[in-house]
Length: 129
Image (cartoon, rainbow, N blue to C red; front, side, top):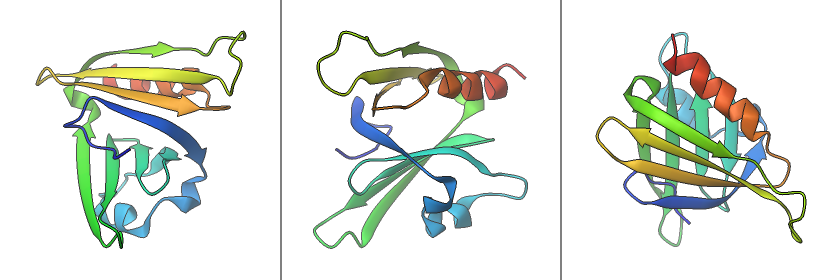
């Protein structure tokens, strides 16, 4: 599923190493900005930096068309996290829901061993300055 702040949800995000963040995302970053956590679906990425959240939506059969969306932490009104249940039969999922100043809610579902509390701490660190 595409990562796009204009849609309701993104599922199956899996953690990736910071050095796996696409080069074109790094080209968008300003001086002093750095990636602190990153995730991917099959082709798309979601990157948490120390300034904002950047999504990369890879489109088309060839994947040459990409859409980039940036939402600064300053536009987040509030967020909620949901931890996985121990009783889940399959790989446990955790969720992040963010409400932005424009009224939009973004919902992200993370697979596997994602530390959802760490994501909450990252967001808190930058919105509670």
